[in-house]
Amino acid sequence: MVELHSSLKITLERLSKILNDVHDPEKDNWDPVELGLLVAKLEYSELDIELEQKKFETLGMQVASEVAEIGRTRERTLALIRSFSQSLGFQGDTSNYYNPKNSFINDVYLRRKGIPLSLCIVFMGLARYVGLKTVGIAFPGHFLVKVLPICEDEPPAETANLFVDPFEGGRILSIDDCKKRLEEWTRGLLPFSPDVLRVAHPRDMVSRMLRNLRAIYNEKEDLPRLYWVLSALIELCPQEKNEALRERGFLMARMGRYHQAVDDLKEFMRLSNDASKYEHVERILRFFELQKEQTN
Image (cartoon, rainbow, N blue to C red):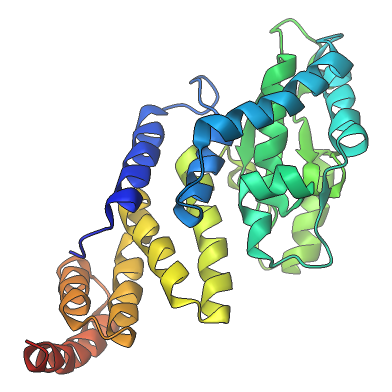
């Protein structure tokens, strides 16, 4: 396997610990903002996580002073939405959606702009300051937030299926709204089912953030940044590991690092169950091993 730079390795280990400690996203105590900042530190290696958390705390205290933990779940959620979208001015970046800064939380709460996932992370982080428990919803193509009831005795009609879309100013969505969106976005190719609105584990959120960045850096052919994104997918996201190994192997070869390319592709072949990709990689691997020998 490719030997990771020490700073990258330390950040990935810290991220991995958080992800491994969360078994039930609805019950366990975990900080979505810390998670997002650690992903940002993969890009900004000098980022001071503790200092950034204090900066975010300033926003949280402003929201807390405006919302003041009043009312039941729905009333408090509406107050949080007003503070999020009006007082703080968070909004979806519709003019430059694929700007990488939209994926890094430290940039998002400074610029007040982001994509659905990053804005959901900010919203979830602010919810903690007003006594609201939230979880992420891995809705296809557009991440959402679900607000959980504050008290068990609240009327179900008020709190059941309370979904929020921070990208659209904190719009509250019903189940029917979600069905309609899915139909519009997939043109009926993806049927609506409970899995469409499943609660996302923090690992799902990190995977989604990294896959977004992988697409951006692939398009830009930004090889150094693509390297750390693929490395993070390999270390943190088991479902993405095998494909990311294959991609990083080819990336290493493009950068002239044939020793690392051979290591990654051999590991890919060891784990692969896709015969067509295995045969393709096996042929290319022979060439990379030849290049490796010539650089010794």
